[in-house]
Amino acid sequence: MEEPAHSHSPAGRPDPAGWELWRLPARAVALVLAVEAGAIASVMTHLATPDGATFTGEALALAAFLTLLSVVHTELATGIERIRRRAAETSYFDLSSVWTFAAALLLPPALAAAVIAVVYLHLWRRVWRPAKVSLHRHVYTTATVVLAAGAAHAAVEQAGGLPATPDDVAGVAGIALAVLLYVVVNTLLVAAVIALTSEWPGLRALVGRLDDNALEVATLCMGGLAAVAIGSTPWLVALVLPPILVLHRAVLVRHLEEAASTDSKTGLLNSAAWQAEAARALRRAQRARGTAAVLILDLDHFKLVNDAHGHLAGDDVLAAVARELREGVRDGDLVGRFGGEEFVVLLADLPPGALGRAEVRSVAERLRRLVAELDVPVCTPDGNLTIAGLSVSVGGASVPADGATLDQVLKVADANLYAAKRGGRNLVRIAGPVQIPAPRTAAG
Image 1: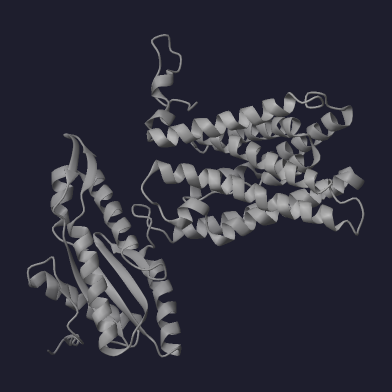
Image 2: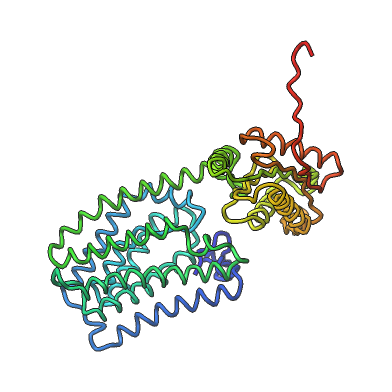
């Protein structure tokens, strides 16, 4: 199912044994195959019904019309979508659902599945494959959309079809339920395979961000409006294209902004983005007369890892440490890469006084232990190895106890970090306000 990158049979044909799909965990492979088999079985079941394999000329023309609109949409947005595919590291939502959802509402399930297959085949050739997206992901996504479309069609059918009159409340409710089912079925199936592919990746990686889901719901609502418009004035549906293309550009800008603020090796905020976010968070804390803290963490003797195992292994270590830091703090805390082997954490909404300082120390010690217990599997020129025995030194400072601005607090935290380094490394130093020496003048 997956297009192999390097594995071929002696005759030069792709070797199925080299498909990327088989490198997934067995439980994930089982789910992928079960969902794809379910989508095929769903289509075959509908084709087996008395009217399931007989389509009117009107239905065929409508299917061709929706497919044409999707092709035009994809061609107009191809450049944007290729960039978006490369820029989006997180959950990706496909704006072509405006056409697949309209097909689900207007066409018999088997014919809607055919439209979906053609739409996604064209997307694969024009967007997914050039963006280096795995073929097995594309096929699985197509299968989930077929099943989601089937659920949406059933909801509208149970409501008596699309709204025919302005007071058809049942028809409107049917479309709303269809939107909900389409999103839920598609999201759950995608989330399930992500969850089975790796250790718990976090809720955002499973179901996407709130604004991603809002975008998908908005796109489906446009698909519902397009389906209703086709029932009265078919060519009016072409007016859906301009707003969809504007949405493409708006989402692309957001993804590019995220890429510009993200450290490529760790997925954390980069230094500039972290400082901007942290400064805003500290200003909010000061307006609310709250307490916050900054931790600076530095990997001890990290140069030895690069020297012994290479920089690619070092990058794997940085990524593994970043994951531990993210998992070791609350969702509202900010974690960033400060540069080299240094990381920074902003702890917001802390208790005032001694309780807050105790919590800062507790979090810092937890992060230090997480790094110390970390085993990082890496691939090196000498083979697959596991890097262990890592340690991190931590310096911390609080607002307002140790400074009123981010720059002041960072200087105090940095001084405490070097106190931990001088004390023997693999230590936490959050002793209290640290005296920062004044810059020496030329005369001094």
